[in-house]
Image 1 (cartoon, rainbow, N blue to C red):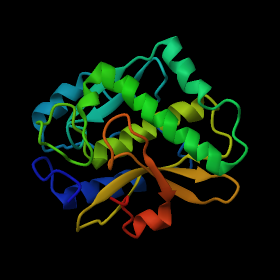
Image 2: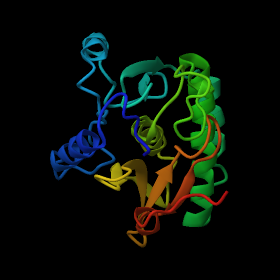
Image 3: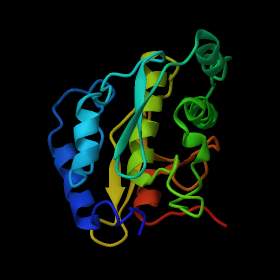
Image 4: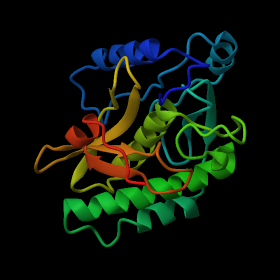
Length: 222
């Protein structure tokens, strides 16, 4: 199971995710407000987060991320000008193909995770749901899907993406072993790709694979 049953059942996670997707409008995903898939059974966290709501339209100097499983906590980040310039530099020179741009996206998300981890404690995040060192800084696939979507939105807003656009989060497994991911859409072919950070520790490159392959149960080779 890729979600943490201590916080919310797989059924509720999946139903919550379906509800979020069904609420989408005709507005492009790359312009819609980013909202976390929260664990509403944790009233203490819900109350705390209501006083510092998730930033739905992120900017490099003002964005939020989810952590501690199913967004039970929210942390806030402000990148410096130098840090953001380092992100931008990964996309220059401009990519000559969609495949090359996907490699740039991997590097950018990895670096964004490292910068974010310095401010939020998520540098402690281990691959998958590894709680061997306790929950501090750990993220499940619900958190990772939302956070990667935030990072993709930052890249999108800065017009760093030429061959792709940020797309919606999606899931697989539903009732059995549910798993979630961010996605991108290749503009020329209209093919969607999963952008999955959950399989790796903080600051390591996410996996970007065709969404159909991911939906069929793809996992990285050991």
